Image (tube, rainbow, N blue to C red; front, side):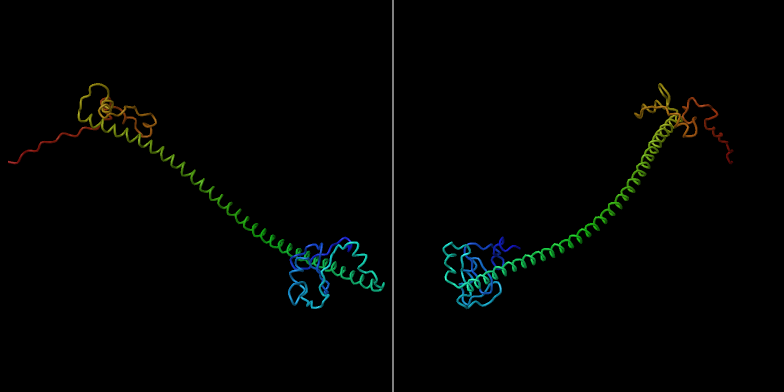
Length: 256
């Protein structure tokens, strides 16, 4: 630090203001701004706020002007012997040097404390980053497992959907066969009963009575039933395909 370029700072804790105008100087080589000096040194006994030294002497505390006028500078040391002037000057320079050194030590202390805090914050930040990285990896693993479970559910859903569609097709097929067989049985029962039909086949007449739409069975349905003769109307069947007649009942003689 250059002593010519630097300014004195207030030595009051938590103040650190640049001294200007008037300052309070103590015998223990400390300087304070006019505000804190007036407040601290108005009490008795006076103590230095920086080092807690007792200031009981008449000249232990001096309020001085930091920028004196030219008249003051011309007369303050006038008439003193050169060795006295040099002694006063050396003591003033020693006070200034001490203040500069104290300021340098304070700045170094502040810098070291800031470095320690920065290192502590960096360490804390590294720990937090490591913790966040572990949490992120755990979440990534959980997301991967959930994706796998979702894929399994999708595959199961697809299989179930296909089975359901197959069951629906089978149900529709069986429903059609059931309706056809029900209508055929109804027509055969009416045919055996000998019911007269006005026009059309017995199946068509039965459909007109029941209100169902008549539709001839498809070749696929006939193939799946295993016999196409079942769909032939009773009036058009061959005698070979009709049910055999029951034998006539024999007459038994009565007992006398």
